[in-house]
Amino acid sequence: MILTKAQYDEIAQCLVSVPPTRQSLRKLKQRFPSQSQATLLSIFSQEYQKHIKRTHAKHHTSEAIESYYQRYLNGVVKNGAAPVLLDLANEVDYAPSLMARLILEKFLQEHEETPPSKSVINSMLRDPSQIPDGVLANQVYQCIVNDCCYGPLVDCIKHAIGHEHEVLLRDLLLEKNLSFLDEDQLRAKGYDKTPDFILQVPVVMLCPLAVEGHIIHWIESKASFGDECSHHAYLHDQFWSYWNRFGPGLVIYWYGFIQELDCNRERGILLKACFPMNIVTLCHSIA
Image (cartoon, rainbow, N blue to C red):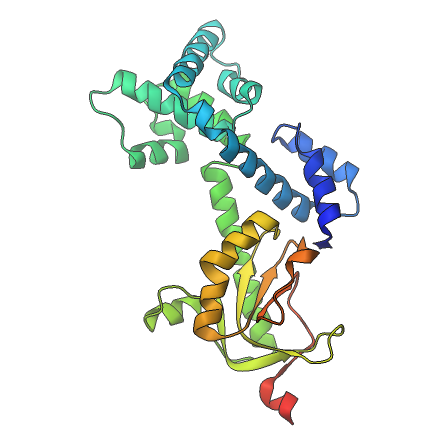
């Protein structure tokens, strides 16, 4: 799904004042029925992450953490089965999984002789049954399963979706009888920063809007929507490095991108929202 900047801004504006819940996502789908749910979810998640980054510091002051912890303790005393921590996160507009991390760290600091390590915290968030307090374990669990933008459950889902699209891309390359090296093979050859696939025989993608085709040496798979923030970060951290090492390439944003970002074609980086079917090998294009 390719959106203009104006279309993207309209969707993003609708997310300014809504909490990061599945109910909000359903309302967004009703508001923009022509957009796929996968695209809306990706935009929804990315916009919320931008918001969290902007407001992160205020939740991590010692005063804020102490206030949240006391409110948590008072809440579970009244009703330990109620979603105290989840409600608190929604009230102060902070991601439930991140709120759970704050309270868990504070709890362990209060009850353990040594400060908890990051690995211990991460392990407990992945498996709340390890938390040595049953009430807190349940509260953390509620936050994890109800957070659609952050947390170990979301990380696992994103990793699985990313891998799924890489497998899909591999199958499409094989279907086209294209010879390639994948990321693991390239790293075995000593490359430290690589795209997902290097085409051993470059291909030409025939663009119906262009007079000439574009030569492609590599393909990068992104199971997300390409907005300005993420795309510019990828350009800086990945795509231009690939271009310097391997030549021009193709980036597939499987959930779409902002149309105006596809402005580097002549410099050697193309954007697509799906695998292009109209490609031929370079030797065929010469013939």
